[in-house]
Length: 492
Image 1 (tube, rainbow, N blue to C red):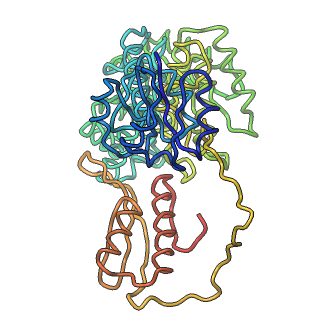
Image 2: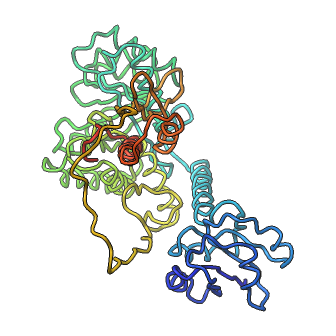
Image 3: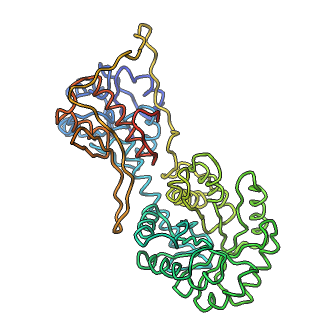
């Protein structure tokens, strides 16, 4: 395919470096390529026939007339020159757009294709255990179990909204964490509430056999956790209800006790067994616990495996996204079936969504036999795969400095806040930016729409105040994006 890439003077070197010999480059007599017009392009075209002309992704003119005249498709390329090599590699297989920049179009198409592939792999996967249509183990996707901590002491509304939130985040299984001081009637109420809210598998997390039996009588699907101390008191109920049981060792360092407890469960007639060698936090035996997982898999590759990632993410002061991604990769290599996490601490917020994405990435990587990169979906939040071009420092630039004084805007001041995401009646209500001005309040999802409204209503009269509002509103928008709290005038 013969392709012509159109650019301006400022981006000439970057474009030629990215394109190499995959296409011809036309440098127009303008500085900024996005300002290209049909007339300018027409005057500058070489006397050569092309199969495709790519104009800058930020160009806004109507090129349909020129396209018809030339009988050649004129489509939007990427917004940034650095993405041209990536875009051109798909030129033979993708129909580029007149309205959507090629970089955005390709990312969305690759993402859609990735999700379609995940569905296809899951449908043909074979697993030893299925609960309510959910495959566990085998070569099926690792499933995310989200724990609701102290579920028995939550009100019906609190529990319902937490379940809605976890489902919205992508949880495959809802785990009801039960503290030891919870009364049986509270356990029963929690299970019944959860069953009324969702049809996905539910688990109960307690060592107390009386509370386990109450949950089983109420229709729980999975029991966490059984060992030699409680298995005899709950085994008959588990067998009768066909529930699944997560088996743990009597002592975390004693792998042999895990095998003995699994054998005891099988001898009791428990069929649906999930093994949990117990993942330990960093500094308290993380490596040793991973070794236990490895040893278990050396001896038993069939039994579905429970991987308690939350034990690590909750006990390390690091952003959860990278920790969850790496541990999910380890879990995949160990043939794990369930990725378990609560979102108990603020730093672990969004872990369910992160693990769901990680589980899909690892499934695609395993299918492809490659590292989990260039899959169409990713967990990149701060870092970037391709860096944009940096500008050059002008020789005669004025050195910037802050004003020593500030002046009160006679139009009034603003108090800026953000609201939390809320979940009610099965629907998500995303948090918003709120700008309070005297008796007025403006609420919006982006800094631009809030600032545009402030200006339209005449609530700001000084240019320095408008600049300040723009900075603060953008910080508030970023706080919403990254699920952080926000305080006006604090550093982000």
